[in-house]
Length: 335
Ligand SMILES: NC(=O)c1ccc[n+]([C@@H]2O[C@H](COP(=O)([O-])OP(=O)(O)OC[C@H]3O[C@@H](n4cnc5c(N)ncnc54)[C@H](O)[C@@H]3O)[C@@H](O)[C@H]2O)c1
Image 1: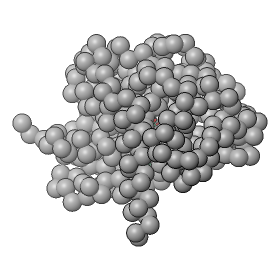
Image 2 (image 1 turned 135 degrees about the horizontal axis):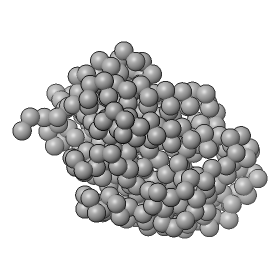
Image 3 (image 1 turned 90 degrees about the horizontal axis):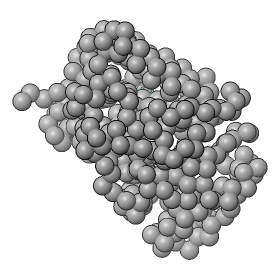
Image 4 (image 1 turned 60 degrees about the vertical axis):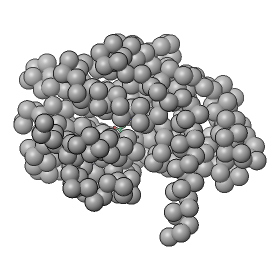
C-alpha cells in the first residue's frame, strides 16, 4: 500500500502534533502548515527528522501557499484556528479572520483539487444548550454578540456550514468532527484552558483557582483518544458528508477536578474559589464572560460507524498531563 500524504493545518498545535505523530507512525506522510501563533515547533521535536514529515511555516490565510500544499497532498485535515477564550477576547478581529477566511481558503483549495477534507469543529457551536447528552442535531443557543466567547462558536458554525454546502452543492468529500474538551500532553496553559492551568498551579504550590461555586461540570477526553477518533473518521468512507461529536461523557465538577489534581500531584496547594464577578480582574476573561453549567456529548453516531469509544479515564488524562508538565518545566530550567 502506498503512503497517503496528509496536509495538516495547525499541525504544530496540541491536537495537530499528536495526529501528525500517529499518521507518521502508521506509515503515512504529513505536511504541516502552521504559523506558530499558538503552536510550537517543539511539539513536533520527536518527529523533526522524520523523512516523511514536511513542516511549512505559513498561514492558512495565504491562498497561494494553501493551494500549492493542497495540490501536493491526498487528504486535508483542517485544525488551524485561533483557539481559547483569552485569545478570542483579546484579538477578536484576528480570530474571526483566521477562523472564517482561513477555513474558507482551505475548503476551497480542497474542492479545487478534489481532496477529502476533515474539518475540526467545536462543541462551542452548541453555545448555552445544556441538554444532556448533546446530539449532533441539538439546538444552538448563543448569547449576545457583545460577548467574545460566542464569536468563536459562530465562526466555527460558519466553517461547518461552508464545508457542508461545498459537500452538498459541489460534491466536496468533507467530514466534520465536533471536538469537546480535549486535554493531555502539550496543551498550552496560555489560553484559559482549565486542566493545564490547575496542573501548573498545583505543581508550583500556588492556589488552584476555581470559578463560581465549582459545581459546573466538564467532560474531558484524552487527546490520544481524539486522534484515534479522527483517524477512524479519515479511514471510513461512510463518514463523508456527516458531522460527528468527539468527546467523553465522563462528567466531573471543576471543584472535584481541582481536588483530584491536588491529590495526583501530591501538592499542598489550597483551592481558591473565585466568584464570577472577580474572574475578570483575576484571570483572563472579558467582562460579560459566561460560564456553562455542563456540556456532555452524545457520541453514539461516531461509535455506531467506527466502533470508537474513549479508552482513557480522567486519572489517565491528568497523570499524562502532570508528567508532561513536569518534563516541560525541567526542559525550560535546563535551557
Ligand atoms: N483542544 C480542544 O479542547 C478543542 C475543542 C474543540 C475544538 N478544537 C479545535 O481543534 C483544532 C486544534 O486545536 P488545538 O487545541 O490543537 O489548539 P492549538 O492552538 O494548539 O492548535 C491550533 C494551531 O493552529 C495554528 N494556527 C493558528 N492560526 C493559524 C494560521 N492563520 N495559519 C496556520 N496555522 C495557524 C496554531 O499555531 C496552532 O498550532 C482547532 O480547530 C480547535 O478549534 C479544539
